[in-house]
Length: 335
Image: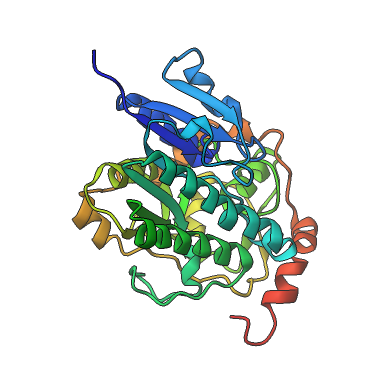
């Protein structure tokens, strides 16, 4: 009888993490999920209820010990757990450093104790700041806000553990992931959640600027496939950019969703275009995206009712929610 390899997925009940679990189970792995269920939801994994190859434990990575049994016999660790969003990171930087840096260190120590064959870190393209495009992995690092800094510091810790302890690691800098199960509650942030709730409520979509800004949107199942490739490769100590290499205008997203719009002021410290140069990951891992932007948006529209209970963001509430953003990032020289 073949023993299935064990993959530990931190943040596995979250947006990307739950799709990662889908892929792992499909590829013959046993999946162990740890999630504090603050951002993640067990319902994201409900389709696997009763599957003996899946276990879920409610654990906060800030308190996890290297001796925790969740690390036992794990072959790979895929580390997605963390906290996102720009504005809350400006308001509560300690929380971001605690979770995204110290929490990552605790997971690294567990992986080291278990002698895993690969640790793959979900890094962020926000480390590049206002980057030249298309953006390569050797672009200068220039985080613009605490979230970006915390994710990059976590990445630095990952490669430090590689250099000092010989832990086999890789990191993937995600650009703009989107797709079903994306978080529907919480702080003002990702454009899809904002627009889909506005569509449901019959309200105009709040477009920042004239909507000509572009984002390198990549559907979540393509993100998961890249992470599995990074876990299964013999290569180690590598960092790759991950996007569709095909940035889309926000106006195109509005067109696909359909509806009226209202325009909001452009925001400081926010790039006009994000665009991942994916040459390296394509060459090293043979990875390619498979879901077109139109197909991906269609999949989300088919599940638009998931945003029924999401907060409705309108111009006044957005202006209030982003006061901190403009206060700190709008200062001369902040960008």
